[in-house]
Length: 361
Ligand code: IPM
Ligand code: MG
Image (cartoon, rainbow, N blue to C red; front, side, top):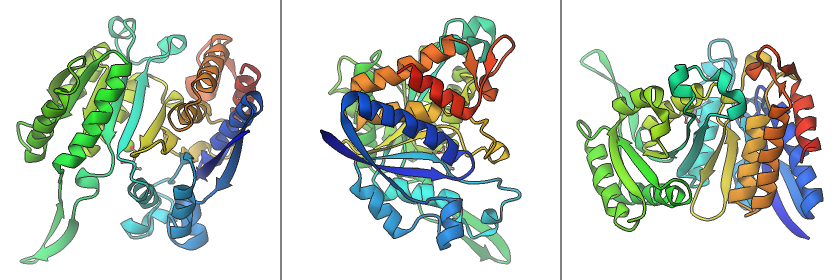
């Protein structure tokens, strides 16, 4: 029997609840496909700060590094009220997330934006736009750019000045571009590279390197779009996109917008990939501290992240299909957690949703 080591990071807020449901599903997959999953839990984010004073310990990072894949719930708390946000920035929960991305070399962040047929009513876009449907992914660069450039605050002539730097090397751009073209090849063969080349040097290099990579993919169509226009096009005509390729900061912003237009943030998974098969998988939503511990959270994004984990890190495509189909069946039968509930559907809890998906596997 094959055996895989999975690092679990339940994290903060609703994290432990939703990861618990995903593990339920992974256990069912393990039984059905006779594959062993060994879980090791590590702390990250606020819970790690409470225990160790830092959002990610070296030991926790080592544990993750040694495993075959990581499943993450969510980290962080309420930024206005939580004491974690009175700490210096490098000791806050989010610093743990940045440290694990960098420490594990996860430079490619894949975030799907898919309008589920069953949830079309939740799409906040104009009916004429929503009824066309859309299904695109954002390939966000995750370990470069403004997030990891030099930053400092100084006082000059009695005035404070803050500096953040946006740097990209051609190698950093090339490796993420390759990932985008590879994914596009398995989808509808379209890459939209998004930048701010009318202003930024880093964007002009981005455009040049992406065009070079495109030469190796004659079967994939490349177009360029300025980021401000892209923000508009996502609400105007999202069906035009297949793969959006973009740098770290633009990807952060556009992926929130993209998930919102699906009307179902609680449904969207994401994968952060490095060079080999290793990856970190997490829901696109946050830790929702307001509903933590109430058994109200929607576990579907985390369960779909577990499906992505099986697909991309373990090559278990059938098991991943099973999970995605089970989710669709449950939605078809009308069950909804509070976030996607609408009149005429059946409200269920986080654990009930997990059980229903398990029964339909
Ligand atoms: C995300 C989040 C993080 C990011 C924060 C929590 C640091 O917004 O994963 O999109 O900006 O990358
Ligand atoms: Mg974000």
